[in-house]
Amino acid sequence: MSDVSDVAGAPPAAAPNPVLLVLTALAAAVMLGLPLVSVQPNRIMPGEGLTLWALGGPLALAGVLILLAALAWLGLRPTRRALATALALVGLCLALLPWGLVAVAAEHIDPDMASARIGLGAGLWALLFVLLLALLELLNRLTLAPLPRWGLTLVLALSLFAALASGGLDSLALMREYHGRSAAFHAALRYHLLLVAAVVGISLLLAAALALAMRRWAGLRRGTFSVLSVLQTIPSLALFGLLLAPLAYLAARFTWLGDLGVRGIGWAPAFIALVAYSLLPMTRNAYVALDEVAADVTDAARGMGMSPAQVFWQVRLPLALPVMLEGIRITAVQAIGLAAVAALIGAGGLGTFIFQGLGQAAMDLVLLGALPIILIALLVDGAFSALAEQLRRAQGRGVAHG
Image: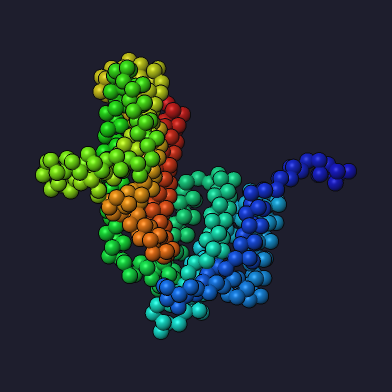
């Protein structure tokens, strides 16, 4: 009888996590079927692809199979403790990935061959993608607070930077490209960040002015959003082309514009186009955020004797700030990506390496420009999302205490 009652009182078993199971199967297929790295004697000669078996033999294969079996077992019984264990395993795999490359480079690259390099194979990129998807799935399932999330990110970043600082990754093809162009890379990175920061700053000022004007004169709302929507629908390359002729004419007509560097190609059309693309999300979020502040809140502020300026700066704007930050986040991430395309019209930035690499069929040169852009976009997205979440929580605590 006691056994029956225990079974009846036990909590229901958790259903298997299909996402984690599918990702584990994909990881197994990738690691067993695709080359993880390639060894090249120089930049021009094609590399020799090496699979997991060629790199580590039966011992490495057995270790990977045991690890994947453990992840699959945890995915079949996804209690909170099991998901936390799976998160630790996935985080450990990501942290050890750079050190695995260090070991491969030490084993397969002769230090006397200065041009020899290790290329990242299709299997390694696919494995990295699968592990990151698994990490996101587990973080979402566990609904961790921002602090543990940032702590995990910091551990992974420290592992990567430690591997880079050790010099063990210097023979990677990507690092060879970086060391050959380090000065140009740093200049392009600074320029890219400066262009995006200027675009976001100017867009924020213009969007705030437009949102306030639409709140003051309601008739402006339909026309303003229509114009901004049309600008948003024009393809980026087409907008760069449309700006070429008028800017070239203005630079020739007014010499002081030419002295400032305003020409048909270069930073000027890129800056104008990026601001045009940024205005719609920024303005829409600012307008909606300011407009949706509850009327009883502002009425209460006025009832306490606040002036209109005090109501705006001390009540309406702080309450609207989380939604406005979402607009800034969208705009910043969009500008970071579009600034790469602007390299086609001589605007410079990290996109220069992407198009140079495409022209030379040098994938590692493409990655030298693309990877920092992805990393910057992820950092900006995470930082603004975390800031908006903290503001919402602070407002929630304020309401609860009030």
